[in-house]
Image (cartoon, rainbow, N blue to C red; front, side, top):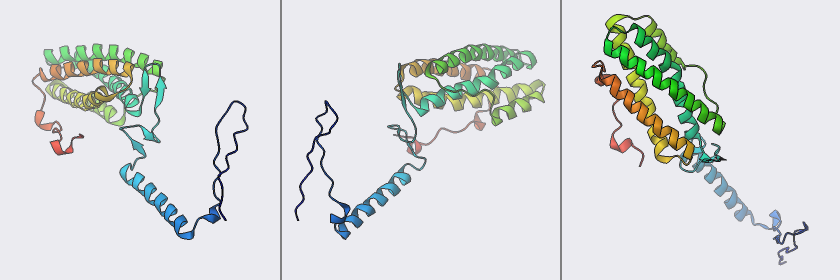
Length: 231
């Protein structure tokens, strides 16, 4: 027997939406129902194969939350960049101060003092930005950073200078990759402005550390080959 669509209007006042009635499930043929179910299963499997961690960086869909702020959309990569800057400050401020006091080389002492001062100012700025955007920041160095600090505490003389410079140079090389990607694609104007300033500061520090003549470039990570780069 033929069925007709239910075109009753929504009873809520002021609304003019029309509702179309659903055919009862029993009216679907067994084969049609099986096909729909199979399609849903295949779709779910495909999503988790393409996006194994439940996120899609290009659009922020699925379970990685985006939120709107007064400065535009704020996404997971934006929060991560702020956290990475704060994380760097937590160990590079005391390490720069330590190098200024303990390094044998005059140049390493000078560079250590500049890094400590710059990261102190940067720490104030990142905390202000995070407060404005309601982003939670780390409060302690991570395990790797604490390990570097412990290592440096047991060194002196030339060994201290070489190790401090190379640990700091490695760390700056890691964080600048994160900042560059966020600067290139963030939708948030406050994050964009802050990260651009941070990129300039990190490049300045990389240049200063290399000016000591102690950086072992052979031990730095190689740039990824073109085929491994996104885009």
